[in-house]
Length: 475
Image (cartoon, rainbow, N blue to C red; front, side):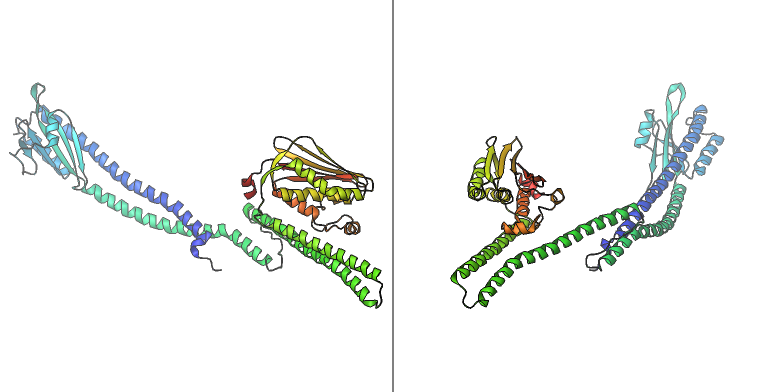
């Protein structure tokens, strides 16, 4: 399957690294251009205020508004206006323009908002970015603490704007150069970062050429080591499952073939005897019927396991009287116990109501009690007890039977596993009973434990929650 570039981790890393490098660079460039221009404006305003305040002081000292025939001051006004490539206007107390370095407004009135506010005693300045000028308005004090006029000066900011444009162009070029370098570095780093993952992918692909696959070793970094270890663990579980599947198929084939082989041997024996007595026919047909029943029992148990192995096995959960269920189970099995003179006893310590699938749970408990009877000694005993607390109920099946070696405890719940194969077949067991029991108990979110010793008997302990939580089953 072809993987699109958009799904590539390398491409995503490249874009992330490029963004991480370029976004701060663009932000810094923009801030630099803006702050540089703003600093120049502030510097110009400070300088303009200093020069203007000094000139206004001379105008106030020499009462220039009342006596404008002062060539030296007039020259200073003209010189200051030319220096800032701007314009100076003097407005008298009647709002009439008495001096204009542009010679355009003299004799006219200036009733702008800034001038009116200035006559109230407040300074003001204004920066017009579109028209590229800075305007400063200062009051001119007269005699006897009166205000004789207003000083208005405008300074051109075209030079500042031109410098800002040049700085912006320089920043753009610098950003482009840095972008190329960052892009190359991002490409290099993204390729280097993804390289270990590609090695892992190649190693997995190579290992998948085998039927089950082999372990991989990629030790470039901690992450690839973790991925390789996780893959190897998964592979080990798959191998175990594959071996279990093969063993299961082999066991099923053997178990199903054994009764058929017996039937065939019995049938061939009858066919080979031309005048066999009726008693022999009856004996052989009885054996054939027993083998057919055994085959049917194996198939039924297999179907039961298959149904419980489904991902979403449905349980018919209802509130069950566990005491009555246990009494019914022992009632059905008591004839089997009487045949071997096994004493079968039920001990109920308290009434127990619980959420359960009564049919499946009965099958699980019946398997345990039936095994306790079948693999017991003559004149032995089986004690079944029922107890509960506020959260769980407990079923214990204890017998005086032949026992199970401790080395076999971990295997007795496996399918078709038998501790004593010959004796198990002789007792009619299929080797699936305990596997079915454990599956049913697991479906109820319970647990089963075994403790046994050879020649001393066996104890199975079952613990199941009294309240069935469906959410736990789904998770």
